[in-house]
Amino acid sequence: MYDVLINFNGEDIRNKFISHLDSALSTVGFTTFLHHENAVKAMHIQQPILNLCRVAIVVFTKTYSESCWCLHQLQQIIEWNETYCRHVLPVYYEIQPSDVRLQKGEFGKAFKATAEQTFSGQQLEHGMSMWSHTLTKAANLFGWDESNYRSDAELLEKIVKSVSNLPVLLATKFPVGLHSQVEDVIQTIKNKSTEVCTIGICGEEGSGKTTLAKAIYHLVHGTFMDKSFIEDIEQISETRGYVHLQEQLLSDLLKTKVEILNVEMGRSMIRERVSGKKVLIVLDDVPNVR
Figure 1: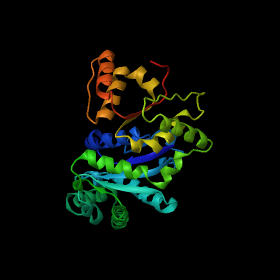
Figure 2 (figure 1 turned 90 degrees about the vertical axis):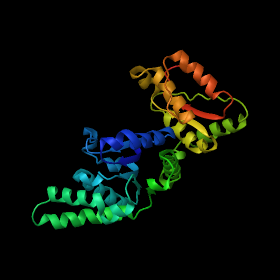
Figure 3 (figure 1 turned 180 degrees about the vertical axis):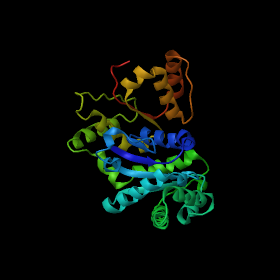
Figure 4 (figure 1 turned 120 degrees about the horizontal axis):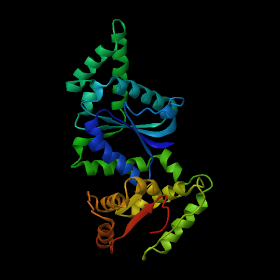
């Protein structure tokens, strides 16, 4: 049901780095689930959310160990990794990997305080040992240290590229029954590589249009410097309007936040900023041609 689960703690990180990570993954066609303390939905009670995901990204911050919920969920994520050989990828944001691995510094103090509030009596030592073992295992996995990159943009680019090349996600590039259609569309794009190429994918609801579009996007987006994948256009246009969609498109292509006052201004900006560039744009669930 989801390609990537993102596990984190805190509204501050959610509104900044997590939102950018979620957007970057969604832009290249991945479906994501933001896994945090208030994310549990009724539909996931019967079937644990991890069973619906392919890859998990755990974003460690200084406040991560303040949440007993996060530490408990991390234990489940590591068990999921070991039982089903699923990929778990840690990101260290404004924190040293060694602080997580060894539970030291401010992270370690918060970890100890959380354990003391969660466990009592004889359970404390066992609970701390269990969580400590889990954090050490997570920190020993391949991941990314934010301090090694010049900017969040560079870090996000590296994460998305690495996630895109994971075998479990590469396997979704050729969904069952859509292999020939994927190859046909890609060949059409190659044949028209020197001109504007517009391709429409039509069909009944549930026939695999979005899956086909994502499969094609995954295979060809690496050859384009500027690209954008926008999902659920009909729903977004009804709730947030076409100006929001225009802003998202230009922000993706120009790699900077763009503000638009009205639809006509948006059309003009798209013509001016995109003209003459080699871009890849995928618009999913378009109600009609405009």
